Length: 255
Image (tube, rainbow, N blue to C red; front, side, top):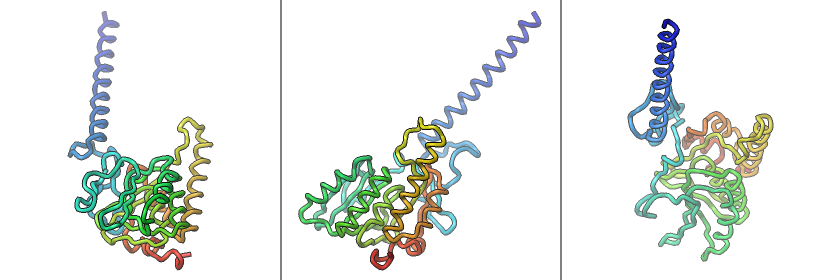
């Protein structure tokens, strides 16, 4: 009887602990999927403020979920939400916009769109939450070779891989009230790779990005902010940092 009673007590404790863990797990999942609500647990999740809160020197990291934090485009320019895939649009005034998520394989597709555009674009207004780093690098090199400039407008964003596309512009125009931000990247490698090979791939990818930045006349020291910012956060560069790292310098003078 004592053994049975003790076993019952252990079972009840185990069941209670399991139920508590399930409740905590549920709250974490709900908090992550609906992080626009005030629900949260102390000490759990990113410590950075939410995207959209004012950025000041030394306080530039913001939480960032690309699928959730999808900014709307400026209504008086292109109605609706940002496209799910990188899209080339020509506005009534003849200016071109390139906006949306940068998917794998977008570089050759968009290069073909630019080649077919009539008249040929001289400048692209960019807005993107990021995406494929390698496609951003390939597109950036194409823009520089083709002599196409880039712009980011007031109230619009260029995050994650988008700044690498931005710096490829033959000219670069960034409104002081635009948001340009970086964070850590993966480079599309298999998560099933052994840790040693995964680290090697990441280091090779980072070296490729740094070489590209130097090629485009950008101070690679900007990567310290990207490498120190987790993928679920974004580090927003201030206007004086954009100047200091060469984002706003004429490419011919920066190199």
